[in-house]
Image 1 (cartoon, rainbow, N blue to C red):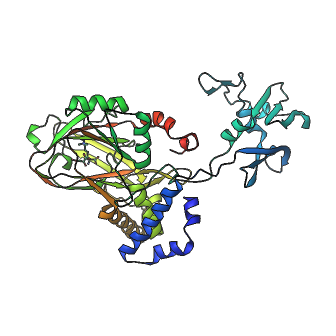
Image 2 (image 1 turned 90 degrees about the vertical axis):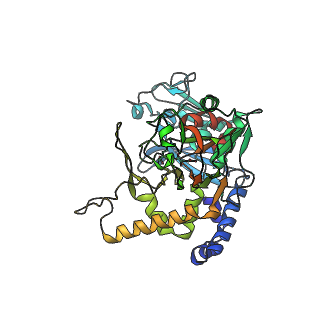
Image 3 (image 1 turned 60 degrees about the horizontal axis):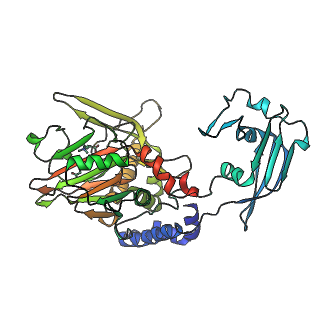
Length: 443
Ligand SMILES: C[N+](C)(C)CCCC[C@H](N)C(=O)O
Ligand SMILES: O=C(O)CCC(=O)C(=O)O
């Protein structure tokens, strides 16, 4: 994104914000998205060599190594306190290479990070050696050192993400069960936030087996694996939710009322409705990018105002599921997108803080929040943002519930769906190995 903002000129951004006609918004937004996706094919500007390392005294942090980094075009310098090098020592006494775990309890690291004199540090032939005062020796190969030391300079939306809307998405991400390749599946899932697998046997059993082969099930009170339809009386595992009707449900993420929302939504439509019942998908990271460009103050509010969601059932097996206080657009520490929690239906009361407490309290705060939520909701419901598909028997769709909103249109006739939630953490643990080493630490 940092790179993208440099390429899109300030005047274009200005136009993006100033013009109010929605077509113009969309046109510029497309331009922005195209640029973002074009960037994805470029390699990251990454510092890949160390030209020198010297001992230096920092006024506050004490003894440091001053490291000069280069990527062939640009040079930069970083000063790193000695303790960092002791902490990252990869000698067999300090690090277990079988388990990839440090051996240190971190009780005496400052004492251990002393050197007796300047000659203790040498850097030559791409190797940094440090002879510590306690007799321990650390040797770094410069390539390994850079990997551990330097964060790539760009933020999310990251090179790996193909942010999309209805017109920029291109061919829908699909893989065939008959020639299934997990790397291909993972790459598409990470790029687009959803992927369909075609050619699955049209039964709940086969769907469950296939889903479990992708990642462990994220079980909830809906059941580990669910089948649901619009005939309440015919369902074993009926719940009091619009999902179990034939009504329209607008774009949303599921499980906003769980402190840990299910990470992946799996759907297999075993029997399509006579009419309607289409699935609508929206890339909510792209929607958030659009909000940021069109309405920065709304973006600011939705990234910083925590709100509550709930799921309440009465009846024989009552439930009160509640997840406290998370922003609708949750950013990660590096400023990228961590999770979108957008479900206008399942929002809990917007309680106000009294007597100067933290949170929404003044009438201005409340109105500004509603304006921001409405602005985001309008983008999420804008048909140009959406991809509309008819799920068919034999095709199982996997949706990243932290990024992509799903919706369904109203329908008539009998319709049967099955599916489950999967553990996204577990999928990503395997998928990260197939997304390229440089980007692995960004997804
Ligand atoms: C998927 N399944 C039918 C089991 C449950 C649907 C839960 C729907 C709920 N309103 C939410 O958005 O989380
Ligand atoms: O019926 C569908 O296609 C989707 C229902 C839904 O939105 C949900 O289960 O969260």
